[in-house]
Picture 1 (cartoon, chains in turn brown, purple, green, cyan):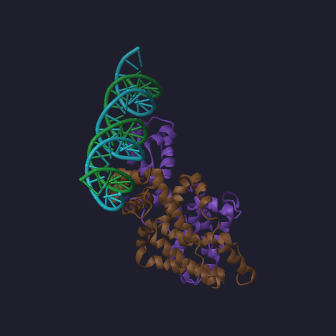
Picture 2 (picture 1 turned 135 degrees about the vertical axis):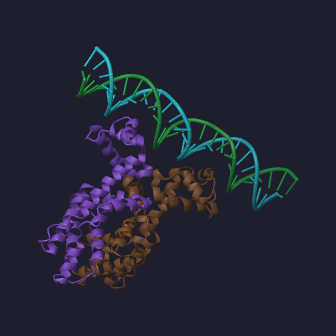
Length: 201
Length: 201
DNA sequence: AAACAGTTTAACCATATGGTTAAACTTAAT
DNA sequence: ATTAAGTTTAACCATATGGTTAAACTGTTT
């Protein structure tokens, strides 16, 4: 089996990403993927034995990329507040590049949680997290203590939701005279930083 | 055509809600809906002419319920800060009752934005919003001024995302010793209130 | 050039899918 | 009891769907 970067295999994976991310495992059609890749439908089965296997390749790739991103936490030498700001920058950059990724992952997990339970075991256990750094900062008195896990939930909410809901916001914000792609996204990033600055004062 | 509350029609709508919310328009199967409702597949077409019509009934209902909820903004006599806290309570209550609704609406809009553009015209234009009340509070000097639209985006992020991502959080928070259904949800609500309190000081 | 392995295609196959139809059933009005 | 209208069902239909197969094509090795 050609594990090398066959152009065909790449084309298939690219097309599969596009179609699976839009319609999900159930909603996606193999013919649609083949058409998008510009190849014969039988080739899909030649490179990936079945729809499920092809989906797994796409989903595993997404999961890996997503959790890698979420564990980019910067140098420990940098002050925690600055690291949090960089974290916000990273998240906005990531979600700008992959706006559908959160939706895809969350939706597929909600349809088939068992599968995720299986996969989460294979993901490198408990990767780097900002939580220990926050706790350290509490001890050193650099930050007023609060629950770091709940804080990270809030932080992710502020960063991820605008992208998740961007199909909605593109319509709604326009009514208020904002353009999502041009200014709104950056204004929101700025406001997230202000929001957490208040909390960190 | 029986527009009265026929038990069969209700059963169909209930089942359709369940299946469409889980799999979306493309992914849902009419047979699945019929089985869930415990009726014959042909009955679906008797009450709703086609899959699309049935979907529309479900989606329109969801859209109506969603936008109604988002425009419950409380009495103008109540101070703005209290009204915002009540707004948070309302959102958490709403998302607890309909945890899949945000995902459903956003996902379907992202697949078919044109349809949403059509429907949004029929929704009562520009329903009640907290934004004018915020602006009024700025003028009266009750609040330090900030962009009220962007603030509402942040507020919705903080409230909606935890529910959207709950399939993920149910797994991830468990690793940190939190149980989503028992305490985490309430702790997050509390933290959202603190978060916006900082901003409003 | 012959042999060979890897790749691609067209033609299939069985089943699933959205939808239709005509007949059977139910219920209330005459 | 008969009629009529609304409701429900089983049996179909055409097409879409995931998947298979055997043959054809391509490039490399001998």
